[in-house]
Length: 407
Length: 164
Image (cartoon, rainbow over all chains, first blue to last red; front, side, top):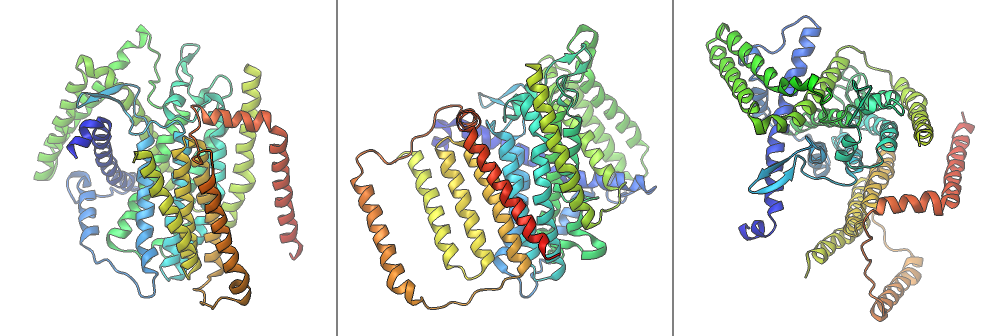
């Protein structure tokens, strides 16, 4: 094994990156659930999770333990092989897309190997992501079919019909971006968005001087929400009609896998939205002396956040909170001190701006869920085929003309 | 044995096993799943030839769209497991001999072939070259095919609307 790694060091480096990313992604997914519950609660004038740890911060941990301890039921009459296969398919496909996401422009050194901030820098990165998401529908469809339950079957059917319909709009909506960038490689797509119009407005595809991809982004986001089966498009698990849809019969950790997959797909859609339309890791400020101070924004944000956490934590109601929150605050301050060091300051720019933009997109995602009511099934199909698809096609035609006119 | 050959053999074995399983399974959904395995293995073979675009399209179109429709229809019709039947007379007297003959002919041709019958990996920039071929050199047949598919779609719509 060690001989293999000595001969192909890239294997070891990739393994390290995969392990780190997987850990970060699964933690992010768990805390996205917490974040969603908190936002939902505040939208509805509640406080949300508050009991497990300060501000409910240990809730994801408690949920995880609960999922592991519960009985894993297999109902009578299910197709056993497909029933156990479905959650694995869903989960694996949902989390493997992260391998293709570039987090920053710089390279880091692991074990003496210089390596970019992406696990797999593929020429056709965007297509690979679409391939992974397009196969992801099987998990939902097969879970619904194999459960031997009418509600599950209806949920699975609805979901597969919906995902086929919206996949078209999703794919067509990014063609505009591809025309402007001229490549499928995600890092190259981000690099194509460098620069500023009138030295102020970033040349992100959303504000592209050739043709702002506003239509493209609208189609992408609506189709992305539908593709991840979230409100207002969550007909696959409409609880008022179908109990819980395709995962009605699943319990314990198999249910958790569907649950995690949904949130992992949300993160993937937000990653892609940031890369394709919001300039990925690019800073929104021009690199002129006037905006030189923005390089220290990550440091300032971590530092101020850390200090606030320490002050707030010391006055928190419970003893656990008085320990945990200040500890988190000190950790953040340490992060701030680390990212203020000369070599690190430039390295954190890319990931910082990238993750900040992703966070904003994720917030909108959650916000939409708790604002809009669910569509009827015929409305869902009408939006997909009669509104979104023509709009995405119009965007392709308009962008093509704009690109040709610019040449 | 090079790594290339090892990966090829593994993918080929998976593809053949999936195809055999497709015929042997009694339930349509299991057969459809086997077919998806075959499609993904084929995509892997394309990837081995550096035809990344074709590999991605193979998965997006065949595994991600066409097979989803297959599975969708099987689920919608709620088709159950099929009965096993004995071979029909036609299969006995024509099918089996013809299949053996085809197999023999293929192995004879492969064994006698003078040029190496291994597909060569395409050069760098395969996606760009494919696009040039499709949209410049063969743009007329390509668009003609699109119109043909469009006619089929309109035809399907007309047939579906007639009863309503």
